[in-house]
Structure formats: structure tokens, C-alpha cells
Image (spheres, rainbow, N blue to C red):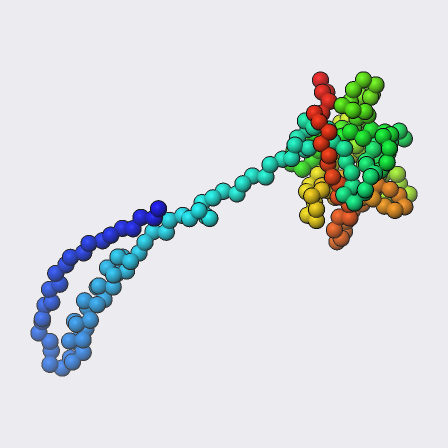
Length: 219
């Protein structure tokens, strides 16, 4: 609640009438104007109020909560937002692709590295249980010859830049964008899933992260 200060002012103004020279008709105006001049600062002081902070200025912005699927404690499947039935898999030949069956490694655990960067662990089978093999992580591969960048499986190394994937919320839908060094994961009609720099264009592929329960223990 704002507080107002009340000023009680009582004063006695004594006007001294002095002798005015005969040849100075403007002297009387100067003397009579002086009470107005001295009264102005007092009038301004009585109307001055100290602004109090309002709810809009004092309220702090709410921090954005990290989704559980990006906490490193949940395993997920990943589907393209407009990919219908196909899901992402690190296939048996080691490349990230979209498949419509249960082949390859289709369980992923994005693990925070700091900021927007994640190491994406990949598992075969439910919960990474017996017979699933050791986990591998996403890694960028440049096949050369002017061909687009791909994602393949490799032994997990959090200090490897090619395994540091940025995951951010998509503006156009409720999915996520996945990128590495400004090259974004997208689907290509001719080459399947590739990584490509956007230039001036918007991302063309976003992905849905589907929670599949607690992540496997890596102890």
C-alpha cells in the first residue's frame, strides 16, 4: 500500500513596505512579486510523492522448468512431429534413421552437459535390460564428398564436441529441435535423417520426446 506524506504548513508572511524611489515605478512590482516566487517551491514540495513499486515492476519472471525428458533420469523414444508411425533408431549398421519396427536402439537418454547441450545415450530393448549391450551415444559423422552430415553411434565421450547436441524447444509446435554446431537434424527425402545448417531458413523438422520410464542405471 502506498504511503502519502502529509505536510502541515502554517506561516505568517510579513510584508515590509520600504521606501521606493520616485524615479523607479517598477520597484513596487518587484516587491509584490516576491511572495509568489518564494511560495512556488513550497507548493511543489507538498504535491511531490515518492513512487512506490507496483506488482508489475517488482515481480520476478518465473524460471522455466526443465522438462523431465531432458533431466537425464528418463528414457525416451523420439518421433518426428510429422513422422506418423516411424520412430528414430540407431540401426544395426550404426546410423540414426527412422524405422517403423522395433529394430536397432530406440531408447534414448538425453543427459545434460550444461546450457542447452546434451549427450544422447542410446539403448536397445526395454529399460536397457539383459542382452541389450553397452549403450552408445549419438555422434556426428562427415562422410565427405559433399554428402550431408549424418548421426551414428559411438562410444560415449562427454568431452567429444561431435557428441554435444543442443536440444531446444521448437517455436512452431510442442516438439524439440536437435542440432550440433548449428547443423540441425532433419529428414531428407533422398538421404533420410541428416544434419544441415539452416542459413536464413527456419528448421524443417522438430521431434516429439515420449517418456518411457526411468533411465537405466549407468553405475
